[in-house]
Image (cartoon, rainbow, N blue to C red):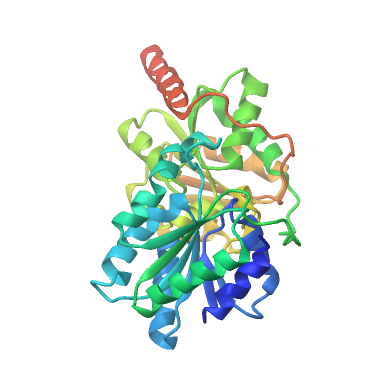
Length: 380
């Protein structure tokens, strides 16, 4: 199915506003929306999926027109509160169309963090009283028209409707290509970070390619990755996991390697961290101004810096770097401080085509990390 054909059905449904968070299953759909260039649709990449529901609510109040909210199924958790407490028919009755990428569909091969979410995707929609249809590569034009007819009846009644999209549903058409203008290669920056902090710190890394690259670089440099806890799911929560560790054991150096899209998703963590001010916490934000792991769509905060936000929140030490030399100097400076610090690293959109994935399960990573951490405590 061509995403452009799907968008024509969206337009016929009277929808002119599209908002959400990118997903690799929906890459061709997201590319088509970006290539539209605000001609047929207003398009917003929101901080998180719940924010998209809020935006859709506001548009409906002002225009009487429903919006389309797109998301990966892992983002269903972020929409539950605004869906149940605002949009639901028993509250305000705000119509909206969801387009949901189905990661971890039962019977398909996918990454471990999607296994449970994939299994309960349709059940969650049913519990939330959202009617839905599932589409795949075999869905015909007539079937799609019938699905949109069903959606129209739900939207007219002040309800929501979801179209759950299986992997491989959309054809590859014209790809949306965007460059951020930065030069530093992320994987080299991560290698530099590991060389500086791995031996005397414990690292919590965020979702996506950052964790995958840290995994491979750690193995290459040190023959293992036991000091690396990879937050493979739960986008935006790595900094709070790291904060929990830093607060529980102030004698160990904790480093959080975060991504710009992840920080933006739950930016309130910056204010919380600043208030707690753990002296043993180094927050490194890798910023390429894009959701690269799911298709490289620019974030809704592109071109801005998080180090300024962190400083305004109360981080004692912040800096922004654009070169490897600046990064090395910043890491040396941060290692000599006993205060909450942030280093923001501006990197280009770039990753190896042969970048691998962790060989161990998420549970095994947790067990290995905890064994190394508590062994270190005994030796200390």
